[in-house]
Length: 353
Image 1 (cartoon, rainbow, N blue to C red):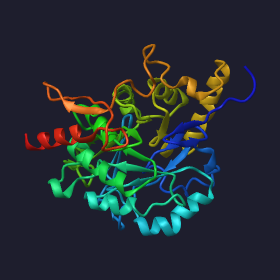
Image 2: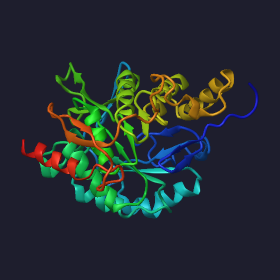
Image 3: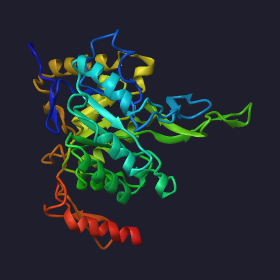
Image 4: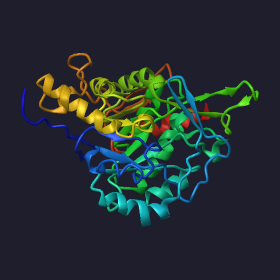
């Protein structure tokens, strides 16, 4: 096959030039990479997590190498939304790249304060990081319960008209429950997975390596887990999924696309090879040319069972069945996907249990 191939994908109403984004926390706001290549060649930039005010991050050692990746406990250090709106956002927009602003908070109110200040001038979409500890609920991460996931997603959905992606944590028993709660609350898409909780010990000091004791494991070690979770979530929701976790090569990215992800994010690989995202884009293009594929969308869901839609084949979230798990619900009022009163009642019942 000769000639141009079409790498563009449409997700949540946005046309991305290709399906390879850079992940939040691994690219800062892009300045450190802009001298290496034009950022507009990327599918999108997911910004560093942005809070209502500057966050200093965690004290002590923040990163540790592992045999197949790394641990990090940065603590979501960031300059805050004011700095983003005045400095980083306008600069990123001038680069001609699609911008997905990752937002963080310790309470629902903090998430809302960031989301409501974002405009199309500095953001194409919002990525909601729900791995943050909820200080009003004893420090439990928002992304570890369907109730908390639904609550924060619904609040942010009301606060912004921008397309909303929810970034899911893998540190749960069943990630599909969280995915369906986010969908029911009005998310336009899901990104997964965030890092897996881990630790390392310095045997000479007889102390944890990281100042925070625990940290997030990323890199090639988590790819099979991430791929499995993407496969499961794609089959459980109707909204698009963006895959993250250990993606370092074009083959990695192609596996996620064939599992049903509409795009991928490259994170840890950027530390070892800042040009990894562009090499992955080139590798996908080469694969398409060699295999006679004209549009990258032909690859999305290609590994899934025949007849199964790439974006999932289940109706929106609804009532809890006899086993306590969420069951399908016919569309109705209450959110973009129509979960309505049945879901809210289920969440109330689960909260009382």
